[in-house]
Length: 181
Image (cartoon, rainbow, N blue to C red; front, side, top):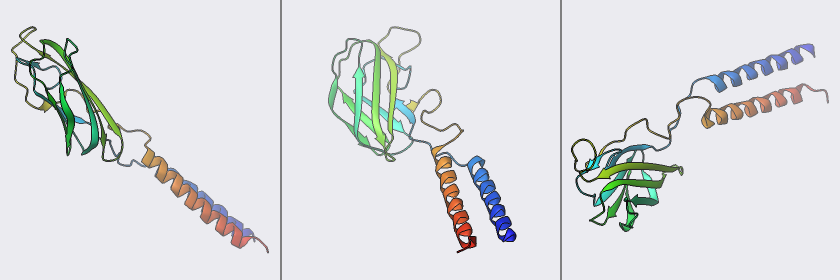
């Protein structure tokens, strides 16, 4: 009888150690979609207002997507609905927008179901420092958003809880077989 209890305790200790190793062992983080580039890009200055704004993401996106383009005079310049083409969201814009600082924002849902939002500010016209450029896709400045930089992840929690429940079930099975009837 004592030998059976020692085996059960030993199994429980091993089980707890396995759960601890799984819980703290580094696992890959599955990052959500993030903005890779935009056209116009963040901080870009254009000679004339763009006729299209686009956002490129690190993963495919799902329809519907929502895009807002806000020129300095707050005029509604959107033409139609945003187009989702794989990992790119595009919005047509009417010509003739005013000079100054513009803001574009996008909200789309990645294939894994997580919403992604991003905002880009650029300027139109000859005001400001440096030469004006044409709108060409460029990499977004700064780190990509939505990526897991480390730490405790949901995947790690799921694995630890699953392993813990599996080991608990095994321990209960061992104890049930050892108990007197």
